[in-house]
Image 1 (cartoon, rainbow, N blue to C red):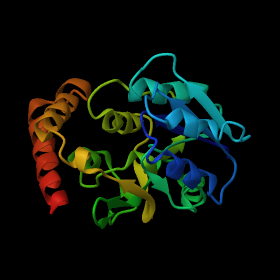
Image 2: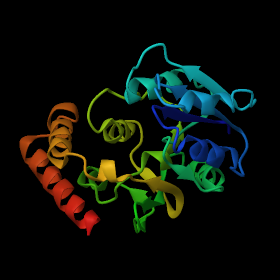
Image 3: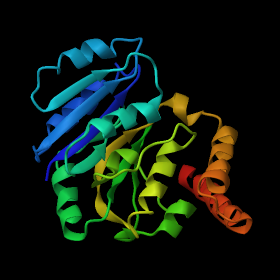
Length: 239
């Protein structure tokens, strides 16, 4: 199977080379990396140009700033490969990520996610003790999914420009698949800066409530049920 890897970039010069090199270091080589720069104002373009002649890399420079959702969608619309994968510009894949996940994907056909390391000033393993993540457990955020760990067969699902757009995207994959499988092995380094750690949690909570009520369109009691679990799991995760 061939894999399209979508890498959106915006002002990522500090971490971009690490992300790209982690893809190029994969033991599974049948992939195309789509690097889409969303009008970066730092040195990201200079870094991207160092890789522009690689045969398995396609580079796109947006004419105007589109935002991360539309930028990922541009990559999805260009992709012709069998499988879709994502990596954010500040994350890093371990070298057997694609090889390991594709074995599972070929076996059961479901989208696949993995355990990962949550890295701030320390390194924390984020894991899940089941091989399948049900939609119910996903909505409860019993497992905090890392988008850079997701792979799935190419589909018509697209991102929407909205807060927590990655959560909505994964939720919409459940419309095509009953479940999402879990590779119980850490295959991604997910880096978190102090700036993102101190982001407005009230705003994030409003985004999530909006997703549950207006986008996923759950009933009032289900919105309350899943939002309470979201809040509790967020508290537990930070401990």
